[in-house]
Length: 439
Image 1 (cartoon, one colour):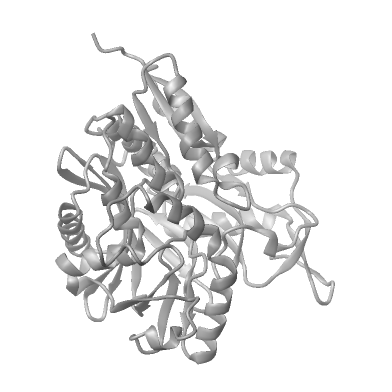
Image 2 (spheres, one colour):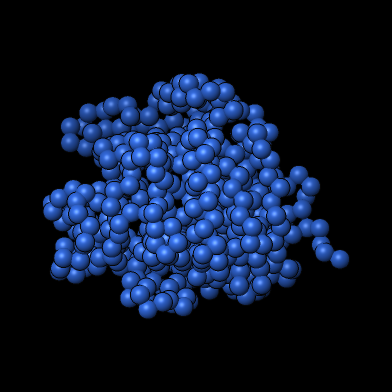
């Protein structure tokens, strides 16, 4: 008889997300086990993928009970390692190659070009360490350049001229090893085609501009060959190049006819690469003037950033989808059963380096969350640090905090956010003048 209690290993666990998973387990079906903490996986200056891979397998093999599922909600290296950890135990999972066809940006574009060519930008690959990098680029200015593997827009640059390109290449040469070295270690476990094998993590992809119009993300899963999309989240950007996320808002206000076209493109691509038995989220732009949709990128995991939004609007975190697909079950996900009509994750950003003078204490944060009952406030900063000390930031801003909240309208939602940020009392200090200011 099948045991009613399942051993679920959470790779890269943290208290906030573990609490959301535990809240789903109303029937006491899950026994959660931490398989390395967030700090061990992503908190250091390097991603120790070899130690994580070998150490995780050793822990799993030494476990005295059954290994029923291995889950994760972080991007690299968690999402990339999961298929390799599941395979020895025969657990439901997308194949390692299908995951790489999403996460290796150049390989992904090549596969997309074979099946959905009308929905992707022009692109080419470039070696940033080559002296003739300029001659390798076939895309005219302006364009985006970014590593074939990174996360959170790390080393992504908007390039308009030769000076921008030289700056991007110099920065890339300095910082790309953070992702390229661990990614290259993992590439050895894949059967790479001849046109991909030479393009390792030390390369960049150059893409023509598609970032006009509105951006959104479909959240879905594939179970036993059948794709389901259960939500669409708007991604609102800000900043000089409109490249920095200011908030994710759910549900999307993009017309359903457009969402349906996005779903169709997604299904074509995932079927083409044989992606199965796992969650995904896929990002699109919709140009309202041309009514054209553009595929930006696909991630082989749930977005942890969206979990509280689904909880507030639909009544359950979509960790439920992550866990149930990992157990080989078709998820039973609720719809509009939550307490709010709209919810958002706000990413509080600062556009320039500064030193942190003052942040609210833990008691003050707790008091704020009692005053704003549905708000969850997570600070990334502490007094004395420079914003440039923050890890894995985009190329144009610093994210100092995230704030989750729900409301019954967008107007109410935005006002609540302003009220919360004003109440935190955060103070920064200009590094040049020494003058203090509120962000």
